[in-house]
Length: 132
Image (cartoon, rainbow, N blue to C red; front, side, top):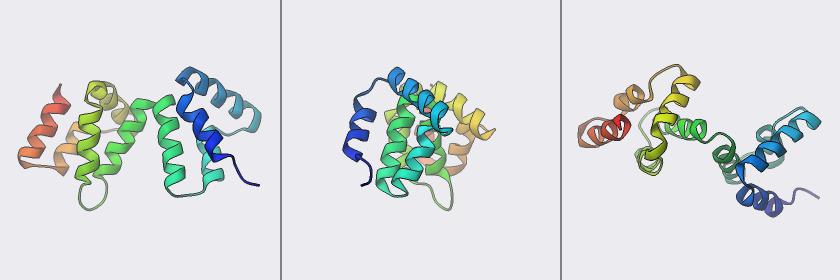
């Protein structure tokens, strides 16, 4: 039985954001939960769930999704420098919107959070990216 994972991922990857937003709204109206929650039930945990939620997030809420990635890179003991650097470089063109989303989601400045995590030359580079 189970899900047609390939079919779901084809829809996620090839549907334009407006189409996925309409699907998400229709699904929520019909079943009372968003696609994000449905995926959690369907895929349980692991890489498949993370990939599905990331792809859906980037289509429906890209700024919030990147803000969450940055928060995740900075949480706990030690910084995931690869994830943080990848996010800052890959998404530098949308950083103003991501900073706003981070502030709204977490009630604090993303720039200050990153600054606390990293010093030295790499920290200076991060601050330069976040200041643009």
